[in-house]
Length: 312
Image (cartoon, rainbow, N blue to C red; front, side):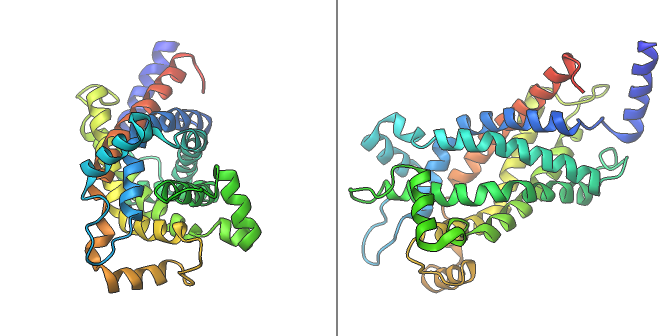
């Protein structure tokens, strides 16, 4: 009976593509992927924020000339642990975030994808399912990123420092501007993650199929690392201009940008021109490759482990 069931599953896989994991499995495996992502990608994320937030004054050299320079100065000043400063918050935040992200993708698959979408690589449907994940993640992510940006930039300003941690930031923002101030950058975050996730998941599913050896149902470790890494880079290629605007909006505590993204866009085009939108891209692309290779490997490992113990 078991052999017959397996043979049926193989036949089904040929016509419909690989069986999609249940929502519970997606949720748990997404959390595992999230932890792998943070540990591998945090130092480069820290550098990205510092590069984006630095103020360039006319007639003075920029504080950091590039990725390596920023890393060197950070290590000189704070030691290697300086590269992992502020990692507790993302581990606590990103684990449920990625669990929700993959859960949202699972729900998106049910809404947008047909039985044969994965077999036929219907990338628009898969992309829409991916974009839908942002609906699940933004309500948590927007206030979290607002606090993270303010704290990472505060570090580069002379003491005394106003905030001890994220809760301090939220309390102060709430006191001064209510829930609107805590959530400043909400729509920017939703736009960034919707666009990014469209390309993230569709690229991963596409490469996963293309890198699967003949007769196997999924790629090997190297294939998964490559598919995850490339998906991560594409995810950020489309997200970075929106992310740059979002960082500027969220770092601002003085209400310098009354119209949010639109105000920032106008100012940046006036003062620095379009190349500014891709400032820090090398650190982002490198981090995205490393972190998402780790993330999808963690995700696939967790799915396989749950399959082995028979969790449906």
